[in-house]
Image 1: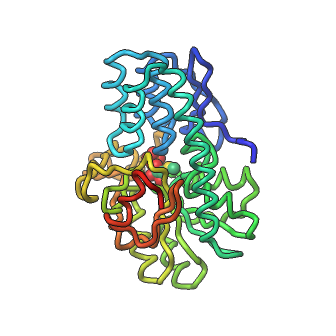
Image 2: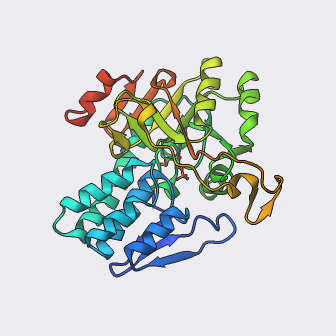
Image 3: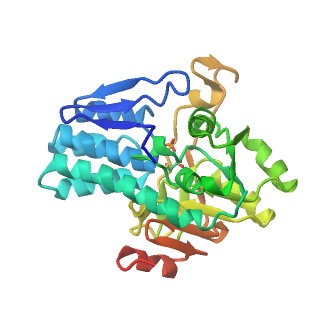
Length: 321
Ligand code: MRU
């Protein structure tokens, strides 16, 4: 399938990023000519989603291959390990532009492989609940969890897209991507998921990941853990789809994954409109960790790891599954 939605466009002397803060109302690209500008775009969520963050950071180095660029980009967001994975690859590369292009091209190929493996797990006519945005917008193209849905679309599937409070990636991005592609999508607020599960209106859950620890514990958008608990309560499969660039074997379990805290203003209101009382004390963790025991399977480009554990994930590093 053609790569219709292009979140990242590399123009050799500049990086063009589809400004995801303006979606779905405006399709506008911002131009980055320095590593600083790319770091700002990542920090301010113009580009977001773990693999897309990694790709953007790689192009940031290609634009300005100097030592300080690595530090600036590494400080942009803490949780998605793809950022640090891409920076490490860029550090080792001799031809920075070629390497950034390779990272981007590989991500697209990897997502298609994840889609093909994952589609085999999707029953015909499945009603699939997904969370946040894991589509073309969050990657070099095609997507991870939403990529599996794309790859399974011939099976007559439908999507239930959760709003994803507080930043609304599900509402603004996933619902929009589904509509762009003609994939039937029921859009719900996050607190409706349990009710729909209890009424047997959902067949499975599939989400992406920002960092997967060596034992399979998975950090993803805040609210993912709640869905995993609900899925277990209702005996529904709960799948995680992510590339190997999202695996962090240096971290033994999910308790060690750094969780980003974002500004209070994202919780107290939206786009300048405040609905919570001024001065209220706010928590805004952007991610949570789903323990491996709640994950039915992890889908990556090398295949499917059922009931993930440290022992089952270990072979992925070298030999595949
Ligand atoms: O804060 P975001 O929008 O960058 O968070 C995105 C997610 O949590 C995605 O589920 C994850 O990065 C996987 S994207 C393929």
